[in-house]
Image (cartoon, rainbow, N blue to C red; front, top):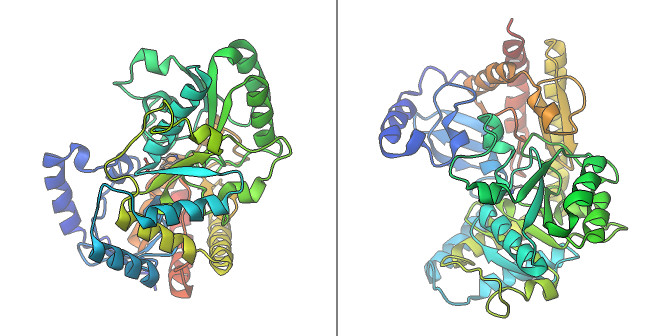
Length: 439
Ligand code: PMP
């Protein structure tokens, strides 16, 4: 089922050349430029189920799934119908509309500690707003984050972020004022002692600690047993809020996200949660939420301002609602099975080719590190053979499998990854593993 596509990327290459003249780097999000892995980014023209088709007519098994949102696969009939019906009624009203209430109700119903959510348009907005709310609620300004955790391109949260910043080996970003970066304390993940020390020193100034519920932006690095509880205990002891960023894990790791996998916690729930990706079904929709008393500090009831022209967009909320409703127990079983089949085969192929690697899991979310030994924190994740990954990535692409173009990302699967798609991945893996080994 695998076939070479490398002979025909002329249209993608031509588009990229033109794109570079009108858009910085030719892309609207840096990782798409293939800088880490080299080669021509494929311009995707259409997608169906687990398949992507590029502008040259090549077909790929999609293991990006839009970096998470396409959990049901592309153009799922129920989502397509919901989007079509919503669009028929109008694209955006700038008034309250029924779908917003339905989506909020669906989200609040799934994650037990949530009483209220506010809808926004991107994960970045969700974390930015949660941060402002935490600062407003506590009257404090400092923020604690973990190295390798990505929470979007919020000024205060770019320090030692994973994702694209890991790919480009950037410590942060130009254009972030020192006054803003100076409010951020970056700590190593899974290190309770470092956390205790930071809170002992700065506890009274810390508004909140934000963490990925289970990090996926330095590759998949789950919290060590008890770590999340320690975050809850220590933040509470110092009067700081705990923000659990479930933008990636939300409604993917389980029907109620990572909270459904690891929670409820003896030490209590996080104060605020952020969501995105799956809850928008491929459209711009995201959310942040928590207890009603805390959320009540937001405008118009409270003093913390937050707003958005397209927040709760009727088409996006229709897509999100249909997607969440489509995430049945069978869907999660299928994701689990497909993820394990692909991860096991990747492990076997890389072992057979003698390529050092480690596979790590968070529910059915997984990633393959091109290094030996457990990855517990960002320093471990950075210690991988990214050259080997690049060779592996290119060989997979040549055979019609589109992985995320970075060694620091989860591999995403969907409910639509059927036998044909999985077989195509399994056929490609041994060849790519040999390419990775350099032989
Ligand atoms: N938080 C996490 C955990 C994420 O994975 C991401 C995106 N990868 C974001 C926040 C930012 O979301 P967005 O790209 O929609 O702004």
